[in-house]
Image 1 (tube, rainbow, N blue to C red):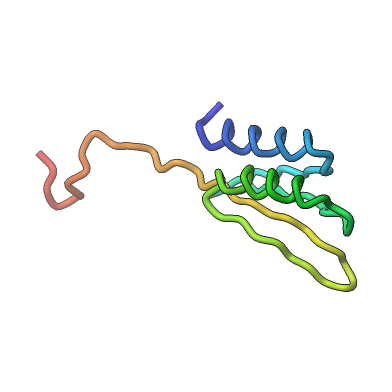
Image 2: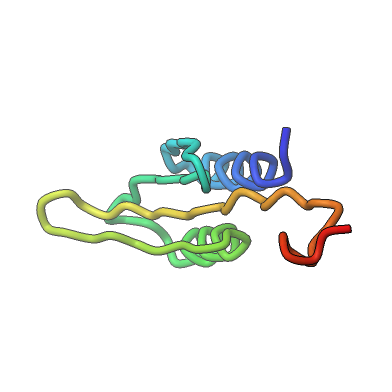
Length: 92
């Protein structure tokens, strides 16, 4: 399991632990984590949720009167390291 997958699963597990229903989806360049946020979420739980998603590369909250509130976080896939980082014009 890659580092980005471990980070995404850790965030998802911590959000689940505070009672949120979580969805995780792998994409080509990132893994997304989404959770529906109930209208009645205690301030202490909000603080914990924000602490959790702060470990993501990006996060946000989508809120609308039609769809409620969805918390999202994204973990970028690590770029594989190569042995030569000087570029194609400087190969040995």
